[in-house]
Structures are given as C-alpha cells and as structure tokens.
Image (cartoon, rainbow, N blue to C red; front, side, top):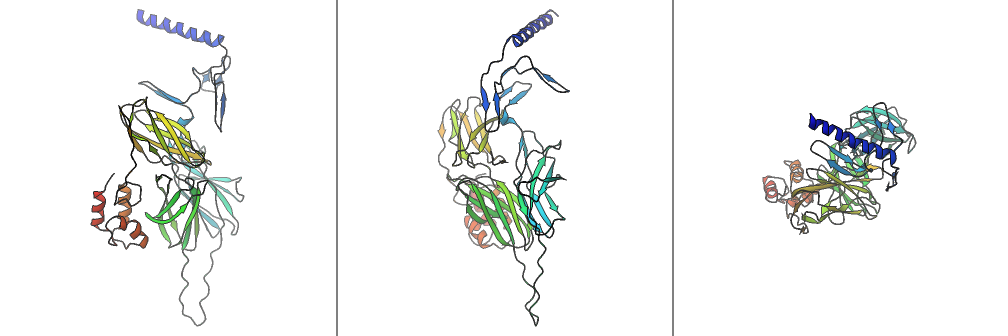
Length: 442
C-alpha cells in the first residue's frame, strides 16, 4: 500500500507539472509542414482551446505532427500521411451496344486496413460530369440500359467503404450506344452464304513510364507492343478478335530493363463491338543498389514511375517502414534508406505510386540483407531458357503461360514467344517443362 501510494502521488505531481506547463506556456511555431495538397502551420501544443465531439474532447497533443512509428510491447502508433489506408483505382472498360453500354472494372484493393464493400457507377452526358450515381453492390460489372442511341455517355466508378463513403474515383470512360447493323441482303440469284461477322476490337489506355516499352498479352501470349509517350501515357489496340472470353495482361519495361507487375483484365467480347479499357496505371519498377547493406548505412531504393509521381516505398521487417520519394520529370525515383532501425537478416521492399488522381497497387518485392558489410548488387543475368514473360525469372508465371498451350495448336505468336524459349518443336510437351525446371529461379 505504501508503494502504491508513493506511485500515486508521484504521478499526481507529474501531471500537475504538465498541467501548469500547459497553462503557462505559449505556443511557439516550430516548423511548417506542407506539400502540394496541404499545409500545417505551427504543429505544436496550443493551450486555451480544444477539439470536441459527442464522444471525446482533445485539448492538445504532446508532440508535433510527424511521420514515424512509435511502439512498445502493447501498442503501436503509425503517425503521418504515409500511414493512411488507401485503395487502388479501378480500371474500367466500356462496350456500347443497342441502347446500352456494358461496363466492367478491376477490383479495388484496400491496404492498411481499408476494405472495399461496394461500387457506385456515375453516369453523365457531359464529359467531366456532373454525374448521377447508382449503387450496384460489390460487383465488377454493370450494364447501363435504357440509353439513347447516338448519344455519348460518360461513366466513372467509385469504390465505397463499409460506411458508404466513396474512397476512390476511376478515370472517365465513354460509349455511344448504337442499334445493331442488319446484315445486307443476299445477292440476286442466291448463293454466297451469310456475311461473315466482323471481329471485335479492344483499346487499351493507361500510364506507364516515359518513353517506355509497353506489352499487351492475350491469354499469356504477346499480342501487341507499343511505346509510351514522354508523359508516360500510352494507347494501343488489338483487332479482329473472335467473340469469346479473354484475359488481357499489360506490363511495362523501364529504360533499365526492369519490368512492372502484370496488370490483368478479364473480358468477354462479342463480334462487331469495340471495347475501351481505360485507367490502366502500371505499378512502379523497383530495385536496390546492394544485395547486402551494412547496418546503419544507406541502401538505395530506385526505379521508375510516371513523371512527378509520388512514390511510397515500403520496407518490410518485423516493423514496416514507409517513406516517400518524388519521381523526376523523366519518371525515375531514388531514396537513400537509413538501415539503422532494421534488424540483421533478410528484408524486402516494394513501392506504389500516386499520379493524375490514380493510385497503383504495390509492385514487385525486391529483397536485400542487413549484415556487417556492403555487397554491391551486380547486373542481373537472365536465364537462357524458360523465361517466357521475359522478367529475368523462371517461376509459376512462366509455368502458367506455358500450361495454357498444353494440347493446343500453337499460333505463330505462341511459337515465337513461348515455344522458342523452351524446346522449340512447335508444340508444348513434357520436354518444355523439363527445360523450364532446369532453369527454374522461383
């Protein structure tokens, strides 16, 4: 009882001193926090006022608003804007039909605790809105019917959280409904047969890296390649598609040969239609300048994104660290990460980007070690065989692409991009998988 009493009066004395200091101390402007989106002036304790709601009253904060992580064995505090939860921005496709436009979109992925519970479709006859929103539930497609043929309609998709709040907005897509064109009458005298259907067309629009290569896959096989502009934007298309279901993939390659993760979009097309997939935002590329870094030294984390993008870098360890780098006008970014807080052993890093009101997901993981010496990373040597998707690795991605062509007749594109990198005999057999197993990197 004596010890507890001493502790109680000691704590009371400490809190008294804190209260006196709050009353007597005037606020002093210590620093100004700002970016292109916000400005916080004099982020220190201010006596004499408070914030309140029905549930709480906040008189002040102990320290300035800062980016960082505080932990003890019982709790952790992630402070600062880099620790806010976020969701990826959906890419959207629009396919006009008779009095309708069919929409589909990619799922928005939540990070740092945010969960997507549904989607709203915004519709307007004016580019840029205002839009009329309709909740469609937690689905990835919607057919907007009852539209006027010949009128162009504009659409956006908004994911919402569990409370119904909109937490992201897609880029705008458009479509002009049109009546189906009747087939021409048969020629006089009969014969000739019915007219052949016209193949479908799919247009791809998005953001990669300035002047970078962009590759579009159809069911795992390279279908078309293009070059992004100086602003990192690209547009390309695939024509003469037979009606059916496809999985399209898009990835970019930066000037150093590093590749993004593959953006994937499943789509069902019908003959005589044109579908536009808009809002593709490729993940940043990433690399490190050392495979092992001496604890306390900096490790360089680098890559490419779109010009002037804000790149958030995650360094994963028992405690996850977030830092931010700004991409230059040529799309490159670099951050010298201080490894003092990291434990000895293996670590990974990844990055995501925010630009043009679009938010990418996190890209590929890159590993490094923290040790007692620095080992510079040597240039990567790619496997001679088996690297079907050309990412300098032979893994399950290459296996899946190759397995798709098992017991199927290879197209010329498949012969050039798949079979030629395995056992080039014009077909996929166990020999091809044996070659892949020999060069397997994981």
